[in-house]
Length: 411
View (tube, rainbow, N blue to C red):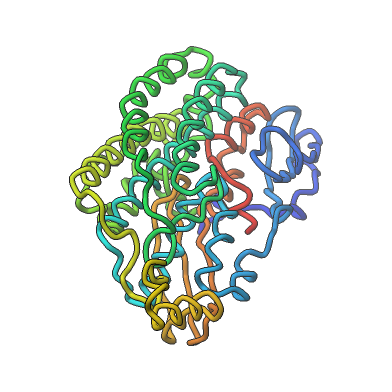
């Protein structure tokens, strides 16, 4: 990495001016600040209102999730994954489940795979709606926030319908899903998918050609493709630079290779391009959801979890008359299953970029090591590069355009 891509540490920002320039000022932005989208401290070096340097200081929200998972049985650790990127709990469930399933060579039924795709794409729309509403709010556009959260409520109602929880669902489990779909799931999703394209049109009518929005976003925080790759950017932040990388297409999972969708890309990599890419992604997610909905409608009832009794508990109808089923049920919820020694890595396309999960097994019922490649953590390091030479007000827009979730940054 070249010197132009250096990410400063907080202790490196001291404030003395470069020779021949006026003295600069060091200022703390956060860790509690309405525009930082979480508990994030930024150490700013300012020359008046111009940003000379930025050092992100993270760790205020550290929960030790990865270490805590090592003390839990594999299936019981699912509830911890919900709390990393708390705007995409189902995506966190999915990448962890896929990694353990790869480690154990577990076959997941096609119907469960299709339900997973439908739900994580709804989760992507929900996450992008939070990004859109808060991003607009940071730039003083109040109406968009209210409209975006109106649609997000509908998605959260769908999650509550299938799992009983609106956010921390823990619905995607190792081997499949926690429960089967309720009878009114498909009609509820159908109504949402029919309404959503017109709602996205409304957001675009308010912002896409709005002169105030254009003034705050076009040409601001631009980053080119090679620099974005050098920083490790993924997701919409990378695709906005023109680099067409999407985990769903590059290394498919859950049968994504069988779905028809496009990968939106930008050109200049500025805030406006990141906005346009995410808006287009919501449309593509609706498109994928519709295909998954059509498949589920055609499939009808079927298995929602693996038939492997060493991984998934037997149905309760079997427990009443089968001693073997009762033993399997008892051992699964007291001891847990024991994967073979080895390791596995899986990555998915989360709303913030490529989310990876690395699992190491020592043959015991608890993982020896679990590590997540968190896109928010990696994307955040590009902030200093984008912000240099801009105004403090632009920094507010830049943070929002990167769409970091601090629960995922700190873990």
